[in-house]
Image (cartoon, rainbow, N blue to C red):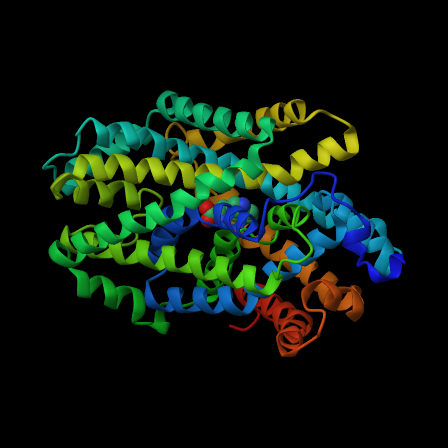
Length: 460
Ligand code: TRP
């Protein structure tokens, strides 16, 4: 009798289910869409020369990110536990090796590092809600917007305060266990963000150097590409899709059995990529029209968008709304960054959800001050990749996420038997499944390894 049930049906989830297929799509979209699309993508593209970076990023999203997202959801749903326990259970089941749990643990650590700086940048965003609302940027110019930004991030007490506020909100929502309640917020937030980006796009077309921006973003100049650029583009693909550390796996654990993993993943990837491209098309025309630098770095959106809001009719309102929505988008992502660690603490250490959220939240909050300081007091302290923030981001995005993704891919493609993955992904084992399996077994692992080797200069 149990034979007719798949493994994930026999293993009922400890946490119940998302309310529906759409609910799950919204939750994963909420995790994926965030600062990675609007804050990080434009500045990474700007620092890495534009077109070629964008092209490599798109290729990585499609060929590497999408199959890994499918694998993560598939593994999560089959294991039905937090990522650490899920990898242990499935590792035991498929190969007699509980050691696969290590993949979950590395993911939990990666989530700590990412959220520590993510919360600081989200704090900047919340601060800018108030700055735009008070009409601080009306009829301003590029120089004073930059000065305002530099003096803002240069003050660790103020940015530390906003980081604390954002982390507190994240902890409260995770403690209440409202992940599933977020469906409603995401349903409204993502379309609203899209509308505001379109308003800004209209502004960029009218008053920015739009064509210059388009050329910068889409005309690849491969002479600017080196191993580091390719690694950065791959890291950005992992970061923006939220794959490689178990966030999506943790969400997959609550996924109803009858939902198509393939369709869900494609929907999320398309939405996520469209928002990033749109953000780039808004930012770069403003950069060129105001004589700013494309390689401005993490301050890029805070030094360009206020110019648009300062000049647009109703700009104070649009600006306030925009930063508010971006703050919300960051919140739904931050929650997904905490979920693997919190679910793990609850299930394996028998802690209550509020206690687990508070303990983990405090650790991440403290870690966040490294980033607060690396834009202020310690901004001249540079080593390896740059400031402390640059190093944390590099370690998590360019090393930990791809390594986690590699392990997840190898597990899904080589360790899990064909029946298990076909069972979850596509019971009829049609051509989509065959393509996924081809990508997962050969293309993704080889591509990730080549990008790593290329980055350390093996081919040059
Ligand atoms: N993808 C989110 C963004 O673009 C950030 C994020 C959420 C994330 N969960 C993640 C990044 C897990 C890496 C891994 O803003």
